[in-house]
Length: 103
Image 1 (cartoon, one colour):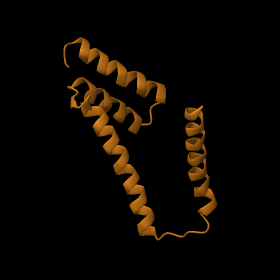
Image 2 (cartoon, helix red, strand yellow):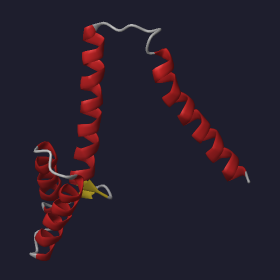
Image 3 (cartoon, rainbow, N blue to C red):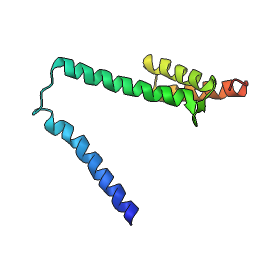
Image 4 (tube, rainbow, N blue to C red):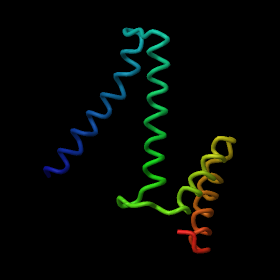
């Protein structure tokens, strides 16, 4: 029961944070520089997450297959390929390289 309460509190908090964006958008005005800084910051955080996920697994170097798969997926996503194709191509690249012995 305690776990259920914790999950519900976290869900409510998440919902309220997401709801605060549209509700406060018209009350808070940001300078164009601040908006650019926030957009750039979000991109940097996303790239850092991709880098740590692509290069490190369990605290050790992931090998060349995983970064190659991420690179293939990234290029296809950048070229606006369908999401299913991006995921399958990235997974297939990683799997085939691992099958070929490239760890």
